[in-house]
Length: 101
Image (cartoon, rainbow, N blue to C red; front, top):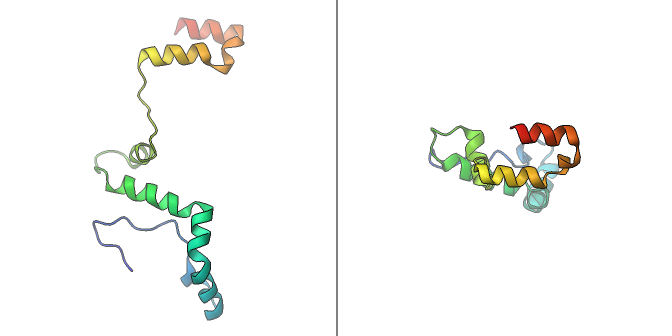
């Protein structure tokens, strides 16, 4: 089952074809889907597929972060609020350095 050019390749999967004996390959094929689901490989594949389908002019790492809902642009207001709630704000040197920024 080769993916078409418009379809993302499955890169996070157990390679059943790499096991030497037929019996072991059969066993791996039988338990492959549950193991992939439990270990999170299927979820990783879905994230990869979503990122792969996004516009190619965006770097892949940014597409992958967008696929899982990570925001990297914060307003100045959000940054000030975070500095006030930050766990290191109790430290006087960090607090004075943060207030200068």
